[in-house]
Every structure is written in C-alpha cells, then in structure tokens.
Length: 106
Image (cartoon, rainbow, N blue to C red):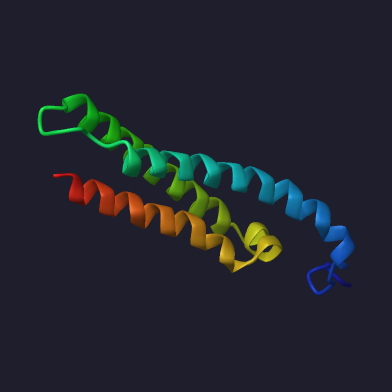
C-alpha cells in the first residue's frame, strides 16, 4: 500500500503552491527591506536626537522580528521543498544588516 510519500508532483501542479507560499513570504521580505532601509538611511541626526535613536532601534527590532518570521516560515518542510533553500538568503542578509546597524549606532 502506498502512502503517497514516494510520488512526485509534476512541475505544473506545483506552480500554484509556489505562488501561494512565495507571495506572502516575498511581501514579508519587502516590508523587512523597507525597515532596514529606514534604519540605515534615516538614522539620528546628531547626539541630541533621541527620537532618531529610538526610531532606528524600533525599525531594527521590527526588522529582526520579520527576519525571524521569514526564517521560521522557510524552515517548514513543505515550504522548503516547494521554494528551495535560497529563500533563506533574504531574511539572513537583512538581519545581518540590521544587527550591524544597531551595533554601530552607539
């Protein structure tokens, strides 16, 4: 009796799954990229700009949370099988940029 695990799905039948999984994940990465851009490009103006420091820290925190969400979703076996391992690259790269930004904010 076959349980269906050894069968392969034709590429045409997987196209909808790539869109259904990839589009929301790409939107999460796009919002994450906007937050990273805001944290890097629009930092505090000087040492007296406490709101600038707080805004940058908030953008970095949200970016790290979205990166964690992106990695967690990509770690799911159906997502990893459907989309492939290269989907780990955007959240990891954006998290690294955010982490460097908050460490150099001082």
